[in-house]
Image 1 (spheres, helix red, strand yellow):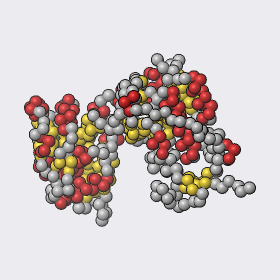
Image 2: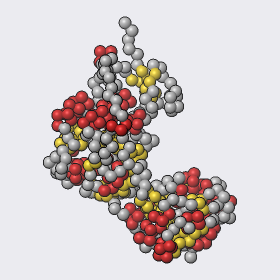
Image 3: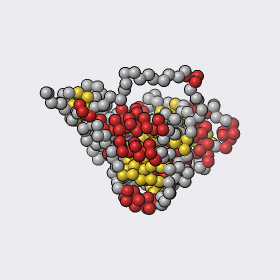
Length: 455
């Protein structure tokens, strides 16, 4: 009788093969094929019957009632989820080690535990370790139940017996199925365990949070299919040198993926930041060149952030350029446009760019603020401290229109800014009252924008 041969599974997409490949034939990634022991024939079980018939419903017969949501008690967390935790949803929370994933989930248990029983399942910590962390965070609800277990079959039976209103799995990489011969954290284990939790959440209407680790590239560890199985994918971002944490949604079947939640890490745990703009602008220097305020839209919320630029003579043959919080290639493009179209030359000059507070600007509307900060440092000209600038820069040197212009100006006016430099094509759509309360300067080119904001 022939022995069962090992199989090779791609850690990125889950592709299986009986032989090893340097490059995965399905996703094209290199060095991702990992050897795994096959499932023994005695452990394979058929879950389907040849006589089984699926139940089919007409679209008109399906209820379209608004989904029920559980309020976590934390507005920033509920905002990212689209208004609360949907019953029967499977939510994946991912982030770097020590970023605060377990902390925020334990704090949510304190608020939800006032009315709902919660089952916290840990595969990494003992029950006593969770108790010590709960004491530090001030979590003392009577409705929080703790289970230190890694066997999925035992966990499923416990959930069916206890019937909690919410379940937390910390983490999915520690869960194991006895039917699979591979180790915990392998592609097959992570995929099959997540499938079981998905069916459990849908069948019993229990929202389940799954904590997932990330690899060295910042992606969720395990197969990419893991993100397709779950309903919502949340990323917890933040730099170790900053106390701020940003919760961002990469996928959400029940809400927008553009919303973010801002938290501050303290000794008592994570505290939500209701006004991120005010926090990001605190300590802003006055009468200093090389700084300009940008306004970016995160979902329906405008957030103001300070952009700082430093341009200085280079001591090397090739000038050095560095960007933090803003795309490096886009910064290089803006510098090229400033040289070619506006006549500001950066040859022989090192250029550094930084977004204060650890915030990352992905929106093209921040182009104008970046250009103003770099030009302000190059010419050593101070940008008026009460000035806000936003707009997309084209390769021809033009300032292109952006969306949500009125909301950005209203947020700036609320925080005390008196002058806004905006794209010319956005000016006509603004209300008359807004034009009266704020000094709005519409511009067509970069040079016109810089001359308007410098003192």
